[in-house]
Length: 391
Image (tube, rainbow, N blue to C red):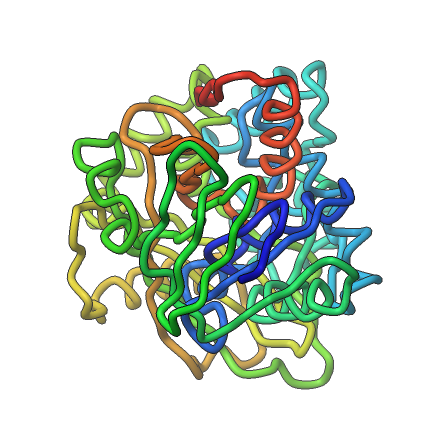
């Protein structure tokens, strides 16, 4: 039987982040993943490391800690990480007003943002449609990564570190917790004793401790996404691209004086965006592919079938903003994550001594997980009960 300081269930971004932090602190670690590789929401996203979307205070600070970890791990684990920044391209007066209002409010709170006119915006993102472009909200803190690469390469790197084991195709079946160390039982009959077990199973709330999730303030969210082939001639997007539609989505923009007018106009012009929770963004991978999305359907069990109408809405809106050389779609998929319904940014629960369930980061897992792991370990070291982060 293996004995370690920390056992982690799940090799998605939340689990990997906790394993990285445990290793950084000199602890022995065992990571188990039920599949041959992580295949959930951690690999089904834009690859946008996105501090600009985080509320000022604890969440933004957590994102900036994650930023340091990403840049450090990129060289160690050998994954691509491009600190290219982001641009919200805007085409309406109310959107442009929100950009200025946000810059005025956000700079004193530590955000590195600037309102750019049309020429400067197109210098950052040459593919922008110049017709009607008012300008853009520029931020220099965002990083591009390939989510399909990050979790796999960090897991591989961890597996080479002293005191760390990473086991794929190793499903956790139950956790035995009592007076002593908790014990993690696996489907192959083996077991791992650990001082602490972190269960980071993404949207899987049925396998371990289903009773702990029953009645919890959590819901599933399904998002539809698309990817083009590699753009010809070495064409680059230049930034993580967001749009005026995104200003309605992230809580960091809540309370801007012009946001209500923007939202009312947008709902009149694009009522289907409200129905399907659509806001339009694009990122570019190292190989030149554009990742495009996305939508948000909430419920305990979202439909497993993609809706072509949603893809059409996303692509139609993007065509008005971005002129890419080859917009043909090569891949379509959906992802599912857990999101809190009560205005907090994560769900951490201790169903038994030495066992913590960690999920519910919503669409912020790629941005917040490494900072959350550090904050979580610091809290444990002080012997404190976890206090959830309000939006």
